[in-house]
Length: 361
Image (cartoon, rainbow, N blue to C red; front, side):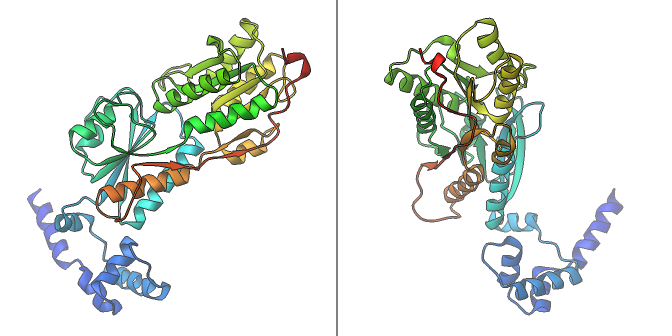
């Protein structure tokens, strides 16, 4: 072991430094730093000179050395609830937005996959990071509580519903307005018998959506009945993947309820519900209209029928959450909103149509 450490020490002494790269490339140390951190734009010609010099000298940027000087880790954490399945396209696009935006400021991203409702470790609060982004907060979210207790700067993507944390920074879609737009769209098509396949019951986005759904239906003289609102099972539940199928088959097939429109939380839920509709001998949109809140826009377009849905701009959610965190860390100056709302857009396709006349009562 001692010989190993001695060997590493010898290597460290002969490794090139940023001064050597700058000298060989004929640029300043600041320019070399900019090329690797991408904090400021550098011309293609200069970038190539720096990279060639680095390669020739076997120079590698040292984040540890930078951390010792700046007292920062130059890393941020991203905590995402997960289950026994691959990330959705929404997750992938969101993560992509976070990673690309963080790289602009010279930050790496530590992805923390943690089961919702099951914070069994100190989580991000104990990791060597400067700040964190929390996706999909729940009521009294333990991740948020730990970050707050450890005085680690953080931004949430979704509304915070935790006692004592009213002024923390958030990036979000306008979830209440999204549900209003969807319901008014369906009501205008004549739908009064809707089923809402919502997200998990403790997720703050789900609570916002439910409040809006109930309010808008009552506003339009529609009685909201228990069978109309459903909540996705816990991520670790065996029923998670069959959620859409199970609820729709139960409501229409077993309970014999009249349903003319379904609002699904995501494309996975929508496709599961679509299978139930087919097994019940019905079709979309002739018998039932289907609307997806959060889905893969490319797949939704290729489906038969193509699915009407919302574009929640996940990449922009990710990028703006990083910018807000950079502001909190003092990297970005200027005025920033404490509660930034990312615009969403409805994309009409062919899965929703005017309610059949026989179903208008």
